Image (cartoon, rainbow, N blue to C red; front, side, top):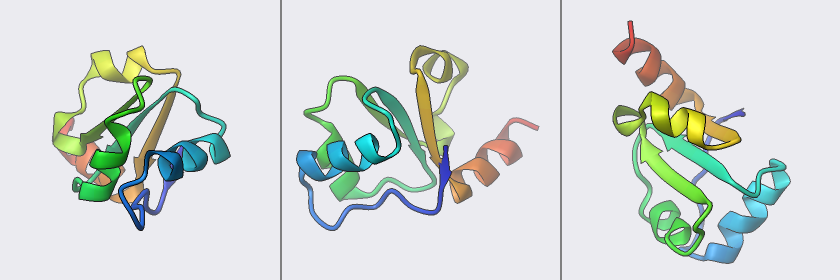
Length: 83
C-alpha cells in the first residue's frame, strides 16, 4: 500500500494500531522516507509491526511481512537506491 504519510499526532500505540487496521494490516512493514518520532515510539509495542526508513529496507524484511505500507517519498528513494 502506498500512502502520502503515516505520521501520527501523538506517540500512541493505539493510534498506529487503528491506522494499520484501516489499511487491513494487522502485521506490516512500514517504510518511510524519514523516521517520525511519534511513529517510531508508537510501533515499539506492536510486535508484528516493523518501521524502517527507506535506506534501511532490505529484501528479507519485504518478504517477511504480509503487508508493506510505504510513503510515496519512500518509494522514490528506494527506486533511486536500487537502480
